[in-house]
Length: 397
Image (cartoon, rainbow, N blue to C red; front, top):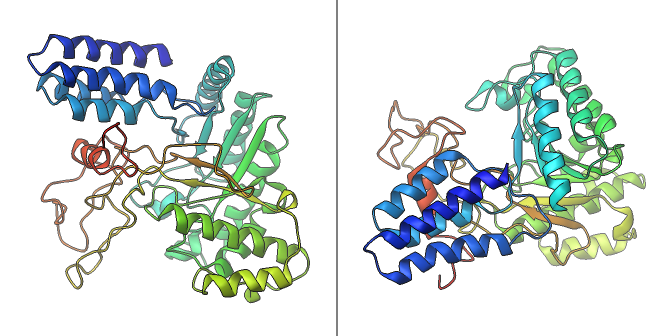
């Protein structure tokens, strides 16, 4: 699979050398490809969205070689491979192909599974399996596809941070919310026991749930039998905020495992010195026995967007916010024994959906254009992410 994208990148380099732009510009493109190849810290680089290469091609043809180099580097950086809505037969075959490809390259693939019934409360990214039985059959197929190969599974973004009861889609008995926990638990029990698989559960992000509200959901979702949890998928919280949130959640889970009341745990609103002192006094568990976490740094280089005060009735600060940048490149070396990896879980450059911000639309009033559908390539945003990357995506910033 990766041979195709590398060939396209080489084609762009050749095209750049034929243009009348300065030689240094062509070198930018060539260096971008080589740099992307060097920055593979044991993580799998999937086939990129073809629209990324089309954009790089057009930029190269227009002589905008540094922008083309940035798009290429972004596309060739390790990212998650997303699965949702495929049939069991399709997902088994596709995951097996990627797992084999990664195994041959001795890299670790990141699979983002996104097929839980009622996902995203049927909003922009709605879809998923029709019912619990269908979801279980789909997870069974995922397990067969992974088999004994190494894999990191980001299990169902928003599945625990946004349960059916949160969006008025459940009955008085909480039937669909109970089913959600059944589905997540089933996936944990099916995937975590695979020889090389690590499963991480959803926490939303630190600007959403407090530690005290998400930890009970993790416990109901089977965190005790999973490797850990993930945070900030498709969001913009800073590395520092994500890392601190993860440490708070890990410590609170350890406290609860020892019989403590989750309501007593410090949350992200506490002064950090006070929270550390509380955990020093109440949690004496080594990191090796605590739940670990991974974070999404794909679009958090500039941190979260602050909407203009009073301008929008529903600012949708999570939806294609302007002037954001790529964040820290993916790595399995975070320097924190609890923090297993920084990953690019969200595919940078792909739209969050049609953002209306409380207006009648159809244009996104913050951008003055109609945003692409969720998951479609967003060239304007892709360029923003590259140009505002922090740290810079290209040498020389």
